[in-house]
Length: 222
Image 1 (cartoon, one colour):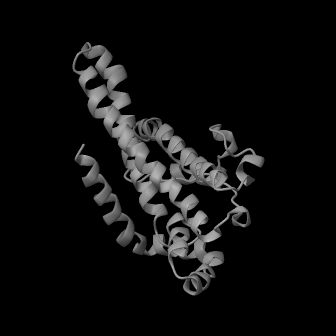
Image 2: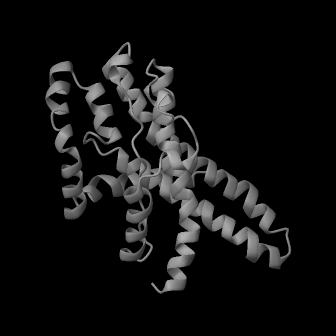
């Protein structure tokens, strides 16, 4: 991939990645707040201002590295996690699981919105406007929305890996019987290392790729 292609891919992917990860984190905070935990609000994290959520490595460096080293085939990032204190919940295990699930659910909704906007708004409009406007305005917008669909589906699927502190792990802890949940939650301090190991060895793909393909097939129904 040459410099021009990299620059083009950055322009196409930057906005979808930023929106996906910011809304993913904000949704955790909003659901937690609705369930009785004001921690995110008190720390100023219930905002759509990207500066409140940007993580230098996860939001900027890692997506750029993936863009370059995967030839633009895979772009992924994350924001600073929204703080949640389960002590404030009436039912900590259930409410923590609901707060965790809010992130992937939000990303799937964003993928649906992007696809519907692309298919029922931009594509019909692009067929009616002059070719000069279509190539300079409509085509880039359609590429951005296509990227948004993929980015949000990948982000949702990755976060559903059932390893805490990923969202899927916290949802699983909320669903397991109490004793099993307590035992399983003990791996959370090592969760990040486990996830890195799964990514490096390719084991994560065994879970993520089928989930991505499943969501994309469902979205194709639109």
